Length: 352
Image (tube, rainbow, N blue to C red; front, side):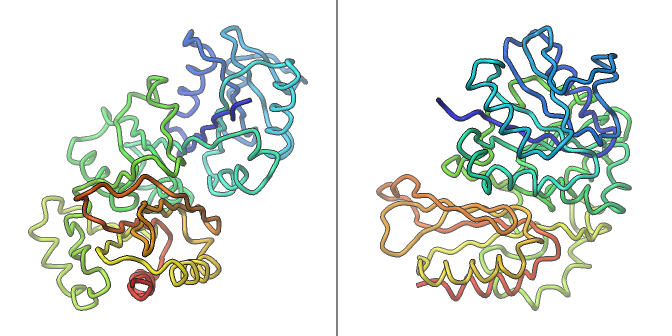
């Protein structure tokens, strides 16, 4: 039996998660979806849709979807759903997990890798984060959970853009891009997103192409990404840089969730890289939200694709380097107060 795709839906309070879930649970989209609701949620979908005080944990919806409220831990709920599906007691094609507005999606994502039973039944497709344009700046300024949710995202949906000025939306887009350059952003109306834009995004597929916004790589924050290891002297320029920058707002926020990119045309020594990354995740794992890369490895004619969430890292052999293709490693790190210099210098020492 093929693995069941799973999507984690996260986002700030009031960003439109419930609107999106309601559509999933009631619209005639022809897909059978199981929605797992964290019932500590501030907006309980049951009250809106089901308006019954039911003792039952799993409710079959009229469009073939299944709604399930977590009363215990996620692992046992996922195992229970997979078991019922195997026995033919429930029919569904995919799972959507809504985290509460204040949750860190990291532990939810880790469940799919750390637990053999869950890993044997499910495939984590992506983490979707909804951002409310009207309240985003305040939430990002004051709540680390909100910044973490952005850092984890494979796709960001920005809602309520019609309620704020275009300049404010542009500044928010720029801010989010600095925090997470690899998640595409899309403005949506109050969380109403077409189902096709929500599923099968392959955010955790190691062989999916590594998307990093190309503009982000253009020394956008005053550092030349090609020489990231030699940038200590550039910090002084940040203030003058901000004056001639197209986005005067983006230096106003010094978010603790940041991203940076490492690139090199020299091959990595596999043993050195493994030792270094192993040591780094031991120390900084809890602060490393997402990291991902396509690596040029000594002794391999194929690309090596790697990614991680917190302390969990995985790598896979990707396609062969094409004749004439420029061999290059490209890695992106998204985390909380990560020691950029330590990482970039360490990676530099793993080359050759």
